[in-house]
Image (cartoon, rainbow, N blue to C red; front, side, top):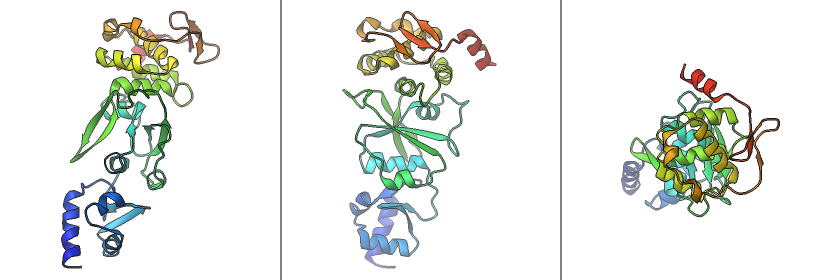
Length: 265
């Protein structure tokens, strides 16, 4: 391969961050149309990992490199959420992440993962959740984390904790959510306040405050709960648990002081 195709390839590789996927739309925007991509693939410069998705030959690409393409190139409203977002920001270090672990992504209702992303073996189990939890402002509580020369969008700890509670009790346990909340000592009360006011789930808001108060976090005292709509009626998280009269939820009967001593040991 020589001449213009080689020149285009060199420009393409300079713009293409290692460890990431490139989709056809992004590649075509840089002059690499289908016939040229086929030539690059045949020459061993790139590898196709699914319909319309490529990696640099010999490159090691993890799920974050695929997610980067979804967010930056395809512009899908999908982000890292819940427990995975907490793990990536230094929380929940006692929980498994990565190879053989589980990765939780959140998206807006109606947003589907492309087949190349959902079918590729990333070495981790993917869990994709669509929700209207913050439908009035889908970007509320989102942040970015840098991974080498590129970054991905994920939930800040305040939002991620609420997403964990959204998954209780069906996909996450109350006990694990309580352990995670125990580590939330430095949440920003202003952001917590904003998210509580925007959150559409009565269950999430009640569970969030119940756990935060039971773990006696200092930032709780800076919240104005009179501005938060906690809904009406009772909510049952588990059957046969104990009823909390303040937040009108039935939760597992557990000793929080014992949990804290075991976790800190």
